[in-house]
Length: 332
Image (cartoon, rainbow, N blue to C red; front, top):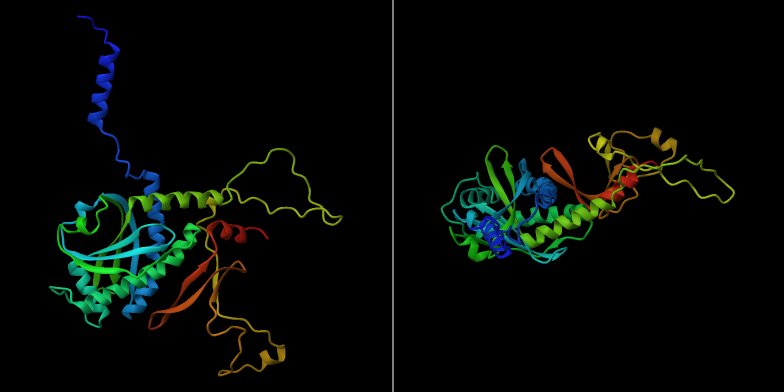
């Protein structure tokens, strides 16, 4: 018997090996795509803190989460609450929140003014309360997500329902999904995972958009040759701002950010007359947004919200894209 394999035998062996190894499902996300979407979900969670605290009238946070691709059948072991937010703009598809039943009932009780007691079944009032809370979280996250992605992202009103064990895959027949897991913490009363689910197709497109947005950000560059001096006057063009090099080295630097409610021009004599109780008229309408000023440049606008009885925060409603922020914070 010859030790040399024929081409047909080689083809059969290669085919069998491919069958044994199996190909990655077309719906799988690459590790880099998972990392990109995870970054967006972290921003999404972080923007929800003030909204949740305001709704509960007590300190509350939604911590940053981690992301992975999962089979939905693996999440269908316990009953819980499912809220589905169709994308109104930005993407075709939906975003879903998933809460375990015990913690969902406790959160509903807190929203309704209780002490966070667990309930055996979610009633209509509980579902309405949870719908309001998750709508606040989604509403707070949408503008921030829009700024991160560089495109308008909006949600339509959600559908909220209690799902029994093993029925999640019937309600969400996606097969696989991107899962982002954050944590809701309410002033020592409640700590529960908050799961965000995205269809893999939406997650893949989100990762693509994020990469494109990053590509627009000024990158490190090397210029060869002798630098040419810039001359003023005589119709010469103004020198372009220098490139921002090695930007990763400065991202952890702290800068002063100011929330500006309004401004006023006053004669020095009026400033000297100021006393406790004096009123200064600002050049700002009551409905106009306040401004986030960094390095004397307006980077975002928003509204003041009450986080606790003695603490205010800024909820951002408009913000420059990441590339525009870098440009504005660079040399003038």
